[in-house]
Image (cartoon, one colour):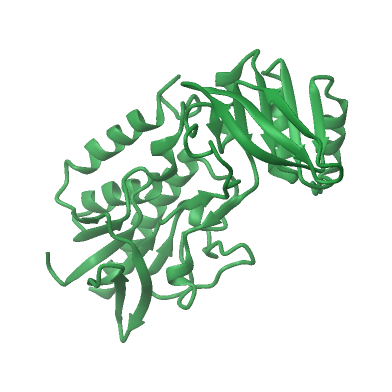
Length: 307
């Protein structure tokens, strides 16, 4: 491995891999640093909204992304976590958890986001086996099924309403009163005959065999416990952007998402950001890939001016 590159890509999800392909085709000298390849897509149960594929599993799509990226000579530090990104004179420096120091003229931050978890027994065991963190991605797979949605904000109510048009029964479980700020959405959920709300309940456990079979909940007020038979559970309590390593270098919003313009520029010379780690609206695979492509083209223009 060399010590300095033209471009450093932090993250190996759809945004990062697409950026790598576009940048490599421009003959940019690239290094990728990522804890894994695929990000959230690698654990997605099934995908029906990615162009060109009526249905494909998350791991299958990741393999296709990876195969295309691997056609190019891209140096990679995989299994590495960036702990700090800083600017040293005109150089951009990434420090990793294992003690490596990687230097580049430009950076694309494509480190994605991670779903906020319930941290209850069974959640990790049944991820991809009935437990999902994306109703937009996985709702169509649960046609005529009984499902639960956990959360009380806009994303949870939106998921419940979307699922009410597909599933036979939807349980909407929230620990407190709904916090959704879109009146039509709230009215739509209230008007759906197959949505049963459990407001003021905490999830205790997720159980099943090969797939999810039931969810246990407890009332915060009475401590009454209930077991609901379900075939799917959608956890919609938000995302946490993987941006902590860059917080001293770039601007972020209250949620920690990196603020970047429509060309993916962060305002820091040489630093661009793409995908779920940014403020871009809607966290979808196709959007992340498109933002990654834009970031690579912005980097090419930046490097061209500096040559």
